[in-house]
Structures are given as C-alpha cells and as structure tokens.
Image 1 (cartoon, rainbow, N blue to C red):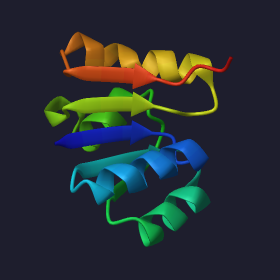
Image 2: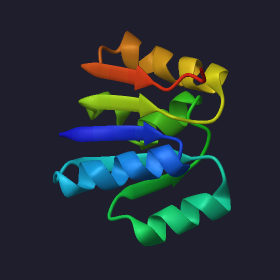
Image 3: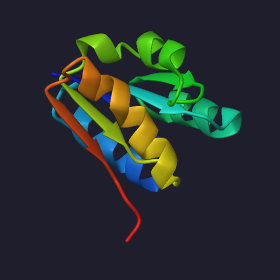
Image 4: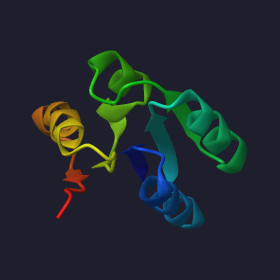
Length: 100
C-alpha cells in the first residue's frame, strides 16, 4: 500500500512509523527544512521538503499512485487545499486532521 502524508509533526511522524511497521510504502511531505532533514534521518521513508498544497510537490511525492493520502499539518486550510487534488484524481482514501 502506498501512503502519502503531509505534515511531519508529532502526528505525521507517528502515522509514518505506524504505517512503516505495517510494511507500507510511505512518502512524507514537510515544509520545514530542518524537520524534513530530521525525518529523513529517522524514517525509512521518502521525505520531500516542500509545500504539500502545491501540485508539483504532490506529484513528486507520488500522490497519483497513492492508495491513501493523509494531511496532518497544523493548518486546517492547508489540509483542505492539499486534499482537493488527490480527491479529484480519485485517490481511494483521502483524510485530513482538523483542529477541534
């Protein structure tokens, strides 16, 4: 299973670890360069440093082949925008975390 996660904070990191433990292929998109480098060093996953709301970054992360797309940035509006393109190309499962 191919999973793309936007947001490499606590939740994104935990999700990536959990999915990697299940032998899924995981790509993480993180906007912060330092955090992206740390994730790349800690995870056995492809980490892309970039803005997950940009189509070029989503394509680089392989969203067109994803079985699941998860947006867990700290910004609700970024999560909603990031989910719009995967939904449009019919990624089977698209989720985002909203602040409550």
